Image 1 (tube, rainbow, N blue to C red):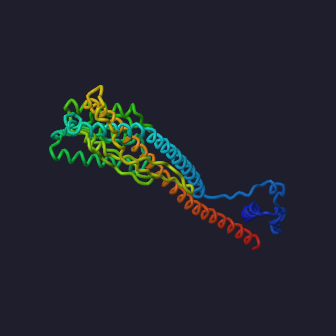
Image 2 (image 1 turned 90 degrees about the horizontal axis):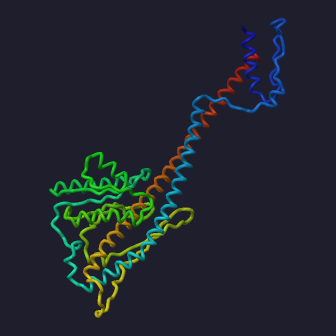
Image 3 (image 1 turned 30 degrees about the horizontal axis):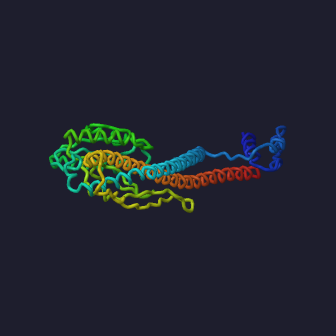
Length: 369
């Protein structure tokens, strides 16, 4: 038994020795069994220096790998969101000439007609007995509090109107709002997908639904809830009255555009206030082929369509900016967690190496004794 014990100790010492002949033990007290134990030099020349670690260190190493892969994914999602923000910016700039011309013509016609525009249905105020809420949310998550802020604001407004005895119905844009309000049996009359690239066709479908409901007398006012894009780090849940219109507000409403730029490796947004479009001047002797009131009545649906498209674009830009911030925060947290895990892994590895060295020293001491 003593011989086998010594054999195990010598084998352990030999396995962690850089010199092939570092340990040679000769036992002269066991008669014919005495021999020389020497490591094979050829095996040491081909042997790789590996460190045997416990299960904890291996688990930490696997977790570090997973965290780093997650960090790569979140950074890629941030860059994708940044590219989509730039595309949304280009869409806003492309629609600006049409909205500017429409506002200019409308302002000139209002100045020409004066108070006669009060007879138009879309400009007439009603006693509010029923309200239609149009809510714009996102179709996907991973964008921080973007969807939850809008849902909470709408929910609070709904309860406020119900407490006042006003009937409320909802037109939802976006899967997240639809999922929340449909599960709670809110009065939803129509649902539309939001998507990542709003267009005039999508805005026209929403405006047709709103106009048909209002002109049929099924609702008295329409309120829009959307997220106003301010910057890459800030966005405001906002509300505005879509219908009925105010002639003075349409002609005096200012506009602004934003541009995504980069500075010192970081994304930034530059905003430019364009102000209200100047009313177009019509000579007093100009003869209109159609009645100016009919022209104004035809312009109002186009104006509604343009405003809906702009609000959709701002909401999508806000969602993408929120996703950029969320993914950047996730990547930063993954980096911090990876550093902490690396330190823990190094401590576990050092503890394992120290324990093995102590075993080797103990075995050598036992052989000397």
